[in-house]
Image (cartoon, helix red, strand yellow):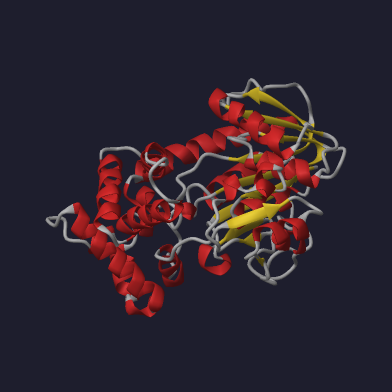
Length: 382
């Protein structure tokens, strides 16, 4: 690794250590230097920054940031060659914060080992355009995990060097960059053309776009979020993807809903602690606190309670969070089910009757699917 890359990575790490999320620091830092940095150099800087936070507890804090970054890169290379070179006990003690063991029912060694790997880049081709996307991108690997619902095997991973955002296929709206676990949430919703759905915490619209594709641009999706900036970004994304069967409306999570419409389906992809994304975003391991988990669990419960009355009889409610803590997953789902007898548990993936993805509440483990961690629960209104 060159001194230029180490110096640039060190500058970004300093910004992150001062309180800016590492992914934001990278976007801002690399964006300023884009006119003079080659794509390969930008990738090298990103890898160095994320490796630093992945191996942070193995590093000597008295060393310079450049020396720590070089050490982290060496640890990453050794681990990539032989994942068993790092013992399970060391991973349990150093790879995650100490509080995680009290917030999860179990912290599997394979999960910890997965967190130390570089994440896979997943894409979602638009339905019916898969062959065109694969031909345009070249090195694409379709999902082949038999444990996935049949619909989820439309996902593909991209290991190549291209900047996917700048490819003509992406600009034409032929595919989205979307993690496999996030795609599974869309398939759990299983919306039908002509239905009316509400993506209640839509953010910048990744799942809204997936719902629109599954609905073949027929019917209507209400997409809401408390952030006006995110909803503006959603409009840009839907225009590029040519998804037009939606309305955007702000919602602050209160009992005052953005519309009086009653829905065939509601997706509540709630804000969460993001433990399931710690492979992709290792800096968050060291900034998330147990108090955040408890605060977010209360928000999730409140959002579910406020959204549920908008469901039609026979309608489907899907709750998802990209975290694995007990308080935000099974505890929220159990308390909600007890408080709402008008809803009955429904299979998350109706076509899956065996394995870890069967049932009315499922956990998508990173080490089982090479993707983000995700909890999904589903109900049907009686």
